[in-house]
Image 1: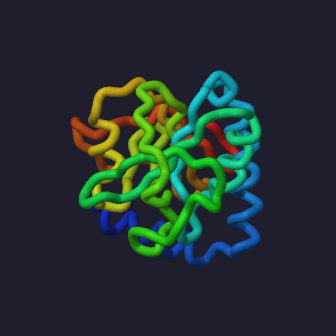
Image 2: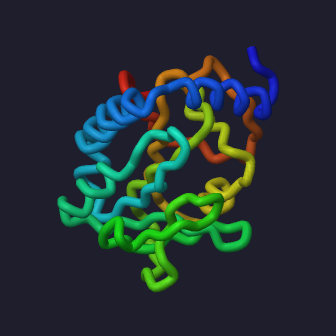
Length: 183
């Protein structure tokens, strides 16, 4: 078993790099369909979603569907060491930002929902809802603020490990959706 988050990140990166664009798109669509069928999605009036990057589970179809379903949608922008979520009306509200990841333009209104379906990425997960992120702490800092978000992480099956390192203060996800399973 891999002991450190650094080793886990390297291992998962190799798997992500090896995945074809077609496989990522196909598995992402399966995940998006599962998300749309979740009661938490159906009941949500607002969806916070990440913008995918570098063979993460793709989120554009989740964002489009949420907008078509009349939900408010917010996506993150990096400001210093923090994430700020902004309302999105369409993908034309995005521009290149932190590390080349698409982010909402500065003209987009800042969102401050306290009760939303919160869709988040991660590097690796275990079945007990622990998550290894990319190491910047952006999501942990954001989620440490008072909120009642229902936290759904998206990942591919190869990102689910038996156990991942965690600390007592780490925020657990509520649900993990892969192309084959909901944990």
